[in-house]
Each structure stands twice: as structure tokens, then as C-alpha cells.
Figure 1 (spheres, rainbow, N blue to C red):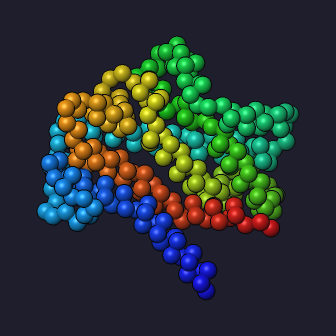
Figure 2 (cartoon, one colour):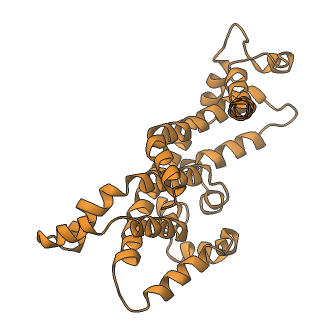
Figure 3 (cartoon, rainbow, N blue to C red):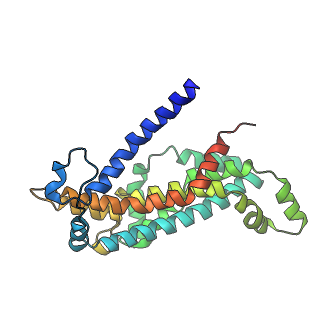
Length: 272
């Protein structure tokens, strides 16, 4: 009983320590710039003001940055899930020549730091005339070793009985995949979607390199340039308002997929 109580108390303390900065960010985003450093640890500032949000939307094309980031993140996530699921299922269920060798090469790519690929990938985008286009922002993120590995491992854990029954009923390999295997893999799909969306949404270096006009900038790049426009005084209220806007889509994606995400984590921790 004492151990259980101590465990719950520890979790509560950790949760509060992690949630406090988040709620402080939200609260201070409604505090005028001149009053932020007068708050101390107070999270209940009154009266609340939307001045910082008005400043942000008036100073930079925030909606354009937001739409660009959302479009790139959603399309990249959908493509990553589709291609990773197809490749993972092929490595898990199909027997073809050099299958294990190809999968080993995919695992090796996970060991290569992404910064190593930036220069050759940039030259490739330039040769294709894709600089400052959505193709450059989206296509490099459609394929990844982590997603293929994750989906393969999940498909290996699925029982083969249902798939064999589908084949007996006349389903081909694609029908079996889309009608049987893919619906059973929803926890893994949700987990991969969350990881991919968050990674793409927070991506800064690659969008900074391949975009050179304001109309193509994503939120992280736009906000970094916005912060760099400050000269003598940093407008912390405006930056906090931007941070809140950046956080909301990621939080929404996690809340939407938390049921399957938690299910996948729990399933991965169970040993037969």
C-alpha cells in the first residue's frame, strides 16, 4: 500500500513539474509584454488580454506559416504511414529475393544522422528544380527506416489465421492488406502518425534550407525569423503567443490518437 501511494505521489509530482511550464506559457501569452516579468510564479493573471495574439497576426503572415506547416505535416504523415505500412507488410509476410539484406540496409539508414544527408539532398532538390516548393518539403519525409521497421514488427505479431482465411475467400495480397492487416494495425498506425506529425511539424533545418520566400515558410522558420527581427527588446509575450499556436496542433493530434497510442505502448510491453 505504501509503495503504491509513493508511486502515485511520485507520478503526480512529475506531472505537475511537466505541466507547470505549459500552463505558464498559456497564461503569460495573455499578459501584456510590459507586465510579464511582474508576474513571478503567478498563473492567474487578470485581466487577460489578447494583445499579444493581435500583435503576432499583424506583424507576420502567421496564418500562411500555419497552413504551410499543417499541409506539409499532414501530407507527409499520410505518405509515411502508407509507404511504411506497405513496405512493413511486404517484409513481414512476403518471401522475395534479398528480403533480409534489403531490410538490413533499411536498418542501417536509421544509424545515419539526418544532417549527413542534407547537402546531397539539397543538390538533388536543386537539380529537380524543387527548391522553394512543397515537393522539397514533403517528398524527402515520405520514406523512413523507423516507420518501416515499426510496421514490420507489428505485422509480424499479428496472427496469420485471418489473412489465410481472406486468401481462401479469394482475396489477393492487396485486398488482404487493406481489408484485414491494415485495420488490425491501427495502434501502430496511430503511433507512427503521432511521431511523424510531431517530427515534421517541429522540423526547422530542412525547411530553412529549401525555402527562400515568405509564402513557403513553415511555422518554425517563420517564428525564428520573427524572433530575429527583435532589436533592443525581446517581445516575450508575442513569442509565447506564437508558441501556444504552434503547440495546439501537436496537442490535438496526440489527444486524437492517444487511445491507440497507449494501446500500442501497452501491447509492446506485454511478453507472451
